[in-house]
Length: 79
Image (cartoon, rainbow, N blue to C red; front, side):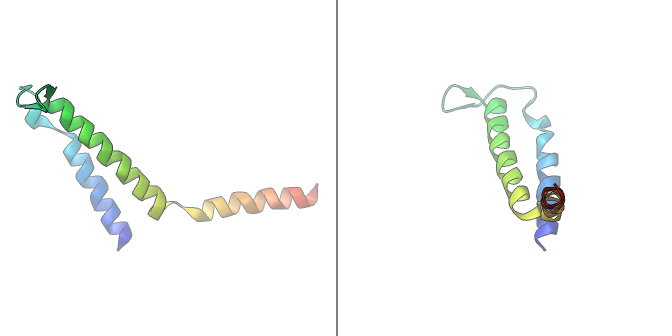
């Protein structure tokens, strides 16, 4: 179930990255000085970083690390 939710989150973030709704205007200004497009991309960057953290935490292929560690241990034992 976690894998499906992570895939859905990646797809949603990919779709949200195509922000065609803020192309033609700098208004409204967020906090009185930040154009809305810039603010949107800042929020998107934070969301992308959080998603990457979730992917590393829950979907990291740990079996690959075990294979590398086992290979290094075997080489160390043979030396």
